[in-house]
Image (cartoon, rainbow, N blue to C red; front, side):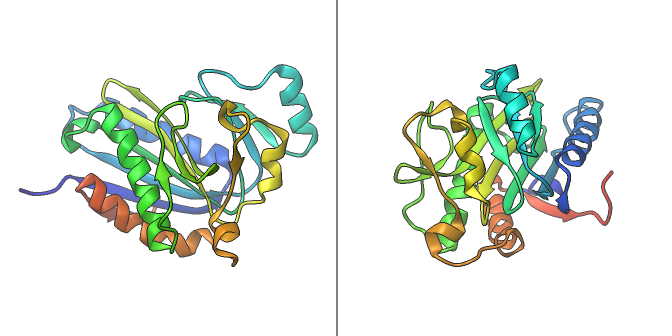
Length: 225
């Protein structure tokens, strides 16, 4: 049986707004289809610091003003979860997928994203990475969160996804309560492995994990559509 084909779009280092704009174009494309196209996998590294608040909020207007004063963008977006940070040194993965050709339901999609991040950590030499149940959705090394996950799904079509810290400046997280979880920490591949790990280094391992987990093929496009 032929595996579903997912378009792979690698944006390198781009403003977060550019990722959101491409995500919106793919959402409209899939919503206009009849469930025959699997969708696209959008990968990038944010070009600048951005704090995002999900559907459950997580940032007051006063907090948003304080964060903007630090030089960061602040955005309310339509994913699940509370507040988190995105910035340089972080792998952002937004699968814009119609789950029907992939044979998945929403919870299975979230679990698949977690499995991809766990597998990536394993391939990078961190076998202790684990997914945890809500409200600790994401991937952890002990009490340190290395990968945040927040998705949106409407009429079988998903958007947003995961953010995995490669060489992220973790001090940005000190200005918020990441994902609303008090008493937990954040970490990165670079911190755990005690060497500089770039986003470009981990993408091949991530793509390997994505194809294995979603049982799909990835088709590269030269330019976004």
